[in-house]
Image 1 (spheres, one colour):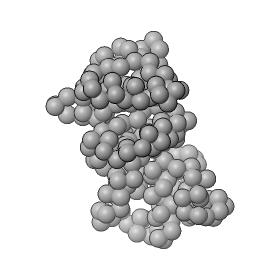
Image 2 (cartoon, rainbow, N blue to C red; image 1 turned 90 degrees about the vertical axis):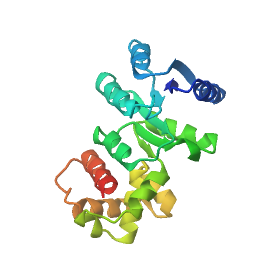
Image 3 (tube, rainbow, N blue to C red; image 1 turned 180 degrees about the vertical axis):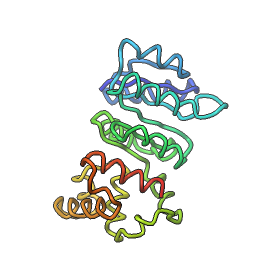
Image 4 (cartoon, rainbow, N blue to C red; image 1 turned 135 degrees about the vertical axis):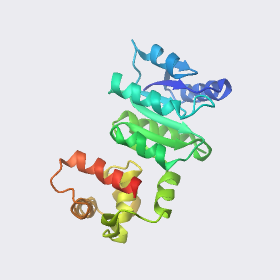
Length: 213
C-alpha cells in the first residue's frame, strides 16, 4: 500500500510516517498544507491520503483538500485522522460519496491494528467511520421520521454500515448470518424509501440518513 500524509504538526507527521513504514506501508509524500499535498501527489497519486481536518488555526482546510483530491484523483482513498469528532464533518465527507473514505479520531486510535485496518478498508473502496462519531449520532434525538420506523436490530445493522462494514463484517459484529443481515438491509432500504435506487447508491443514502438523523 502507498500512502501520502499531510498534517501541520511536524512531529506527529514524522512519527506517523515511521509507524507506517514499520507496517510495510510506503509513504510517498509528506506535506504540511493543502497546496503542498496536491502538488506532491499530482504526478504520483498514492492509494490513500491521510490528513487532518484542520491544517491550520483557520478552519477545516483538510475537508477542502479532501474534496479537491476526490475531484482530481477519484481513485485515491481519503482517511481523515483528526482530534475533532464532529458529526457535521463526517456528513460532509460522505456527501461526496462513501467509496474509499474514512474518519478516525486521533485519541481513539490506541492500537496500530485500528489504523492499519482503516487504511486497508479505505484503500479497498470501503468506508471506516470512528465508532465515537456514530455513537454521537445515536445519542441525538432523531429528526428523521423514517429512522423511527427501524427496529432495534435494524438500527444496529445500519450503525455498523455507517462505520463502513461490509455485509459480512456486520454479520460478524452482530453474530448473525449473512443472509439475516441481507434481509435487515433490504428492510432498511424499504423503510427509508430507497427501494427504487441502485444497490450501491441505496447503501450510501441509507448511511447518510443515519448520519443526518
